[in-house]
Length: 153
Image 1 (spheres, rainbow, N blue to C red):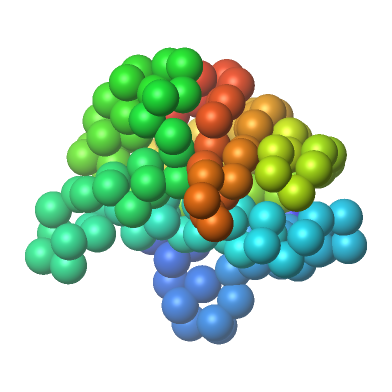
Image 2: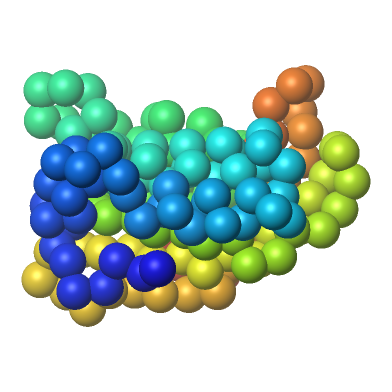
């Protein structure tokens, strides 16, 4: 299911051209073990990172929609924010996420994610990411993320 071998631009063309993306497939497979709202949260996480390079519609990178998935009080948030903003400023980023495990309660879950980043002219970056999400009001927010330097360019 990883999107290896495709540039971020090619990844976007594939996703737009077919109406299908690899992260959608990965999230759909994980549906059997994850609640629909967790699957939608992970889908949104992947898509907002992929769209962040041109998020404002006029070619300026904007990580705000992606970073909105994170609790700003999360340990390491400032580093993660800086790393993401640096990453999306330099180039487009393809993102593919597969939920491997999902454990917890209705208010707090620990996800183990197989996350692949594709950056043009670089080897795909693939890591096992542990992500704690907590329901804040009615929305999920990431309150723990390891490795925190995953997005460092």
